[in-house]
Length: 368
Image (cartoon, rainbow, N blue to C red; front, side, top):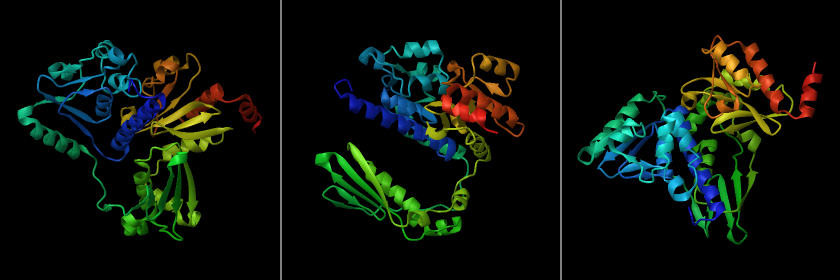
């Protein structure tokens, strides 16, 4: 990376971070499990990728190590996914984290296990056996899946001078202009129930189209992608009832959304895989469930100065100092069957008032 252009570095960091977040999201929400089997040194981005996995197995060959050499070799912090996962996910002591970041050679062997940089060691003589055993254990811990699955055959695609043609997706490249024209064509009709969608299998247009989209964009290195839709899109897309059947409905998230939508000029976006709400150009709340927040179902809310300490000390069973945003005064609130939703709404309004533009606050105050 030292000799790369700034744009390349930015795209590299963005891609690797999205990959790590995708792994953790799949582990938390899709029942998938990931094992990083390190049969050599994992350094920098390689170790960051390993940190995103559920377990890390390192070969014990007296040579292989894990390391973040960015500080001693490049003079930059591994901040796009390294240091935060060391302290917040692997629970590495902060003094050890500081020391680890200065060791270009990294840490290996028993010391790596003792510091919780890896979960286990395996000698070369038993490497394949222990990889298989650890993978089997992770697979057995995964939640059971439905009785029915969908077989995913290889996608059919034709390549015409670099332009790709799929069943629902077409990608036309104008390399001299660094532009790609992406067209997604929907069918005239589509399944409207979960049973019909299952019956269509991998041919269900929504599943097939987005598999094709993912495949088409995988190797594209282009400046601008212009997207257009074709076909009877509205009629072809499945109904909300179908989507609710195909994906677990989250009543807690929907209740948060319903209230926040009543606040003027709010918007919702995904940030690190979690629904996050903005008041104008700044965030004031986000919702988490699963392993991202250590198994909690909770809402993080921007709080006025001093409110975090008061709430946590007053009711530590309900409130806590969330990772990442806790040092900025945000408060985490656990959500369960005993949640006081009036208190949730009050805290959301307080957080919203800290970031919302004046015109939005005026609308809020003038509302009946």
